[in-house]
Image (cartoon, rainbow, N blue to C red; front, side, top):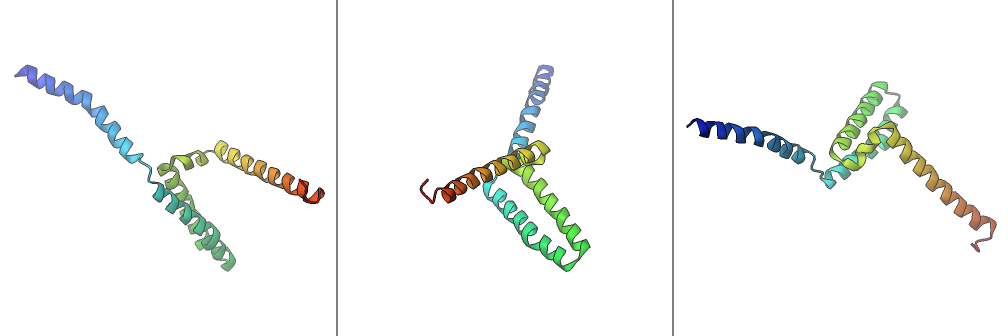
Amino acid sequence: MLRSIVFVALISALMAPAIAHARDQQRNYTNRQQCRRMTKQIHHFEGTVLKLAKDRGNTLWFDATAQHIARLKDSRADACPEWAKQRTAYGRAKIQAEQVKQMMIMAGKMALKYFTGGWM
């Protein structure tokens, strides 16, 4: 009887971390549609609602919208691994540097076409 109780306690102690890990893995499941929906919401609030609040001069609305955008970005970073790197300053700087690099490449190609008369 005592052996069976000790055996059950030992199995329970060994299984608890595995069960907790499985629950964490379920929470980390990424739904791509949810990530796209949050990205669209962020673009909508940044492009339309925030601009409208600024144009109307409503500082409370502007501040509340900015806080809502920050919460959406945090939620998206928690749910979507590809957006999690934007949470850090290094990640944002790296993305901005890559965007500037791509813009310079495109500007160089356009200048080459302009100065060669479209031959290159």
